[in-house]
Length: 144
Image 1 (tube, rainbow, N blue to C red):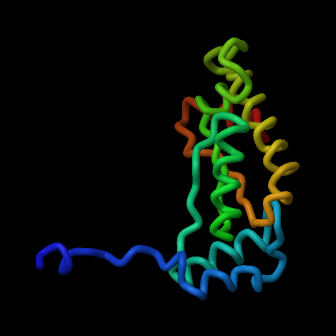
Image 2 (image 1 turned 90 degrees about the horizontal axis):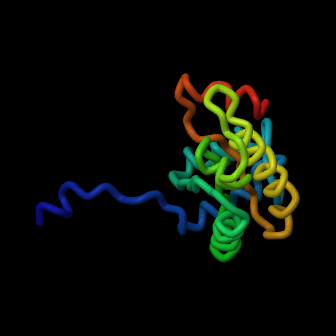
């Protein structure tokens, strides 16, 4: 069976070892940062399971990701892209090239929303910015 010979086993996200992520020091329900975040990523790598990232553009898409993570009792990553962040704030707002006001506002507001609501879902959550091309550095700088 050629398919079986080339098939790579998917990450073991449903294996019992994935449940032990709660034992990683500092890991808690809600947004994880710093050493706890780094240790959780290392733990996932060692145990062979994935922590998926989802580009979110609204509270509805954020809630959907958090609900899925809660249902599976797994950590998730909420990710914002420059365009998705502008959509989060509202496409009617100014988003001038080089300033990216709506994109900055949307990413910051989205991150604040995730930080407030994530603990209620009872899972660890990462907040991440999507990759950033050089032309989008004003967006990244504005978020900082």
